[in-house]
Image 1 (tube, rainbow, N blue to C red):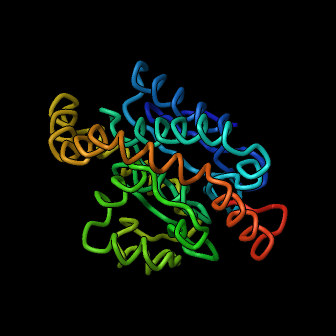
Image 2: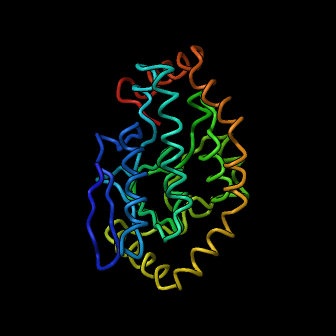
Amino acid sequence: MLDLQRRGRVALAAIDHGKVNAFDLELSAAITRLVADFERSSDVALVITGQGMIFSAGVDLVRVVDRGEPYVREFLPALGAALEAVFACPKPIVAAVNGHAIAGGCILACAADYRVMARGPGRIGIPELRVGVPFPIVPLEIMRFAAPARVQALVYSGAVFEADEAVKQGMVDAAVEPDALLEVAIAAAEGLAALPPSVFELTKRQVRGPAMERIRDGEEVDREVVAAWSAPETLATIRDYIARTFKKSSTF
């Protein structure tokens, strides 16, 4: 599920989960564990990437509609915990976006301290509203932090972008050729790790503090979000989206 290697003192975690690295309970839990283990380790930085042409195509929507409300009520908090773990980690995390990073995949990348994306067919974006589902508080606050000037347009439009345009949109920090992706990501991780660790941690808490406060205050909103995702009409809308767009292999 997560192929972990090391390049010196930098940990490199490659997501390898199904055909499109879709978020489900198991992947969410694995990412939460990954970050917890990283925080306890002697590794100075973490790079997260995907396999092949996919970083992550988002939530496994088929599983959502097949399992319904009980699954949604368990899954959404687990997804939020995984994304928050990445966003709040006191040590540097870099996203090496090797291909498609859609919805949850985009948000995972945006939770990192630095984001580099490979040029090519891969696209990045947050089409949740096109699917017909609202944003939980953690993903929305991560996007508000990562692209503050564009968040409303990105959320409302659901547009997806290739790497160079994603830089202009503020969704990634750099676009590179595919064969340079990991080298650039690891160099960025090493650069962040060269900063005094205690100073980096404090500064990161200061920079991300307002977003974390809104996350902490968002419990009531998240109850509404879970109820909305669980509603029969929402599940029907997701099912229709699957049928229209990706058929049985759908994720977002």
